[in-house]
Length: 110
Length: 111
Image 1 (cartoon, helix red, strand yellow):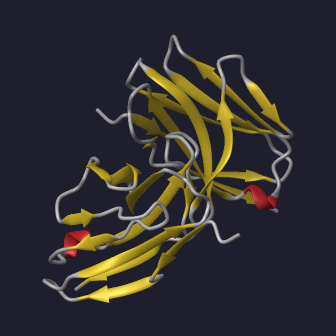
Image 2 (cartoon, one colour):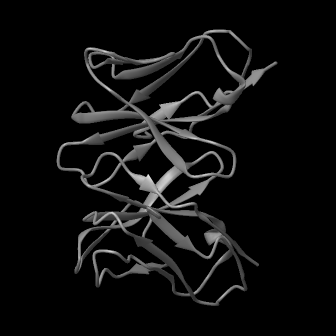
Image 3 (cartoon, chains in turn purple, orange):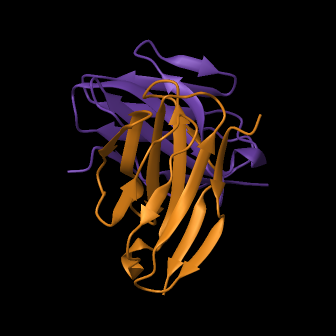
């Protein structure tokens, strides 16, 4: 079973829409959680960390549900510039690496 | 501030050839790693290093070697290229094991 699983999409949404992505992780000992963004043919970049209490950064809200072992990302008022692939990432205590999901592709349509 | 620099950006190799992908960072990060990214597979860890002189294997280490003689540099060597090694390779560095800063990637094709 993969460490991290995501719906690959694609999600095609109109500008201004709200869109949500979910991701599940298999290791209940996972400690840290992140969303990375990857533009086409570019490197991944950290979008935001995900905390148990949930956190918000402008139009982006991330939530963590430890009991169900899933992470979500909500994007409100989608912009054309939000078009990218969003990668769910987890790491575990003592683990020396990040575990990446395969990514969810978002296209925001004018 | 350059961050993480990878060279080359593109490379075509013939089966059986060897080559080294270069990675350098100027952020004085202890932790560096190499990933490969393939369609439908996500990023997978090849090798990593927690400091100069220390390296370890990740999820898919076969066919690759690394060394870490300095904090700044972490080259990845392909010993005998195979078509299965056609991929996009990313080098990353971080202060700790969590937030990673990635280089721009190397697109490698093995024919």
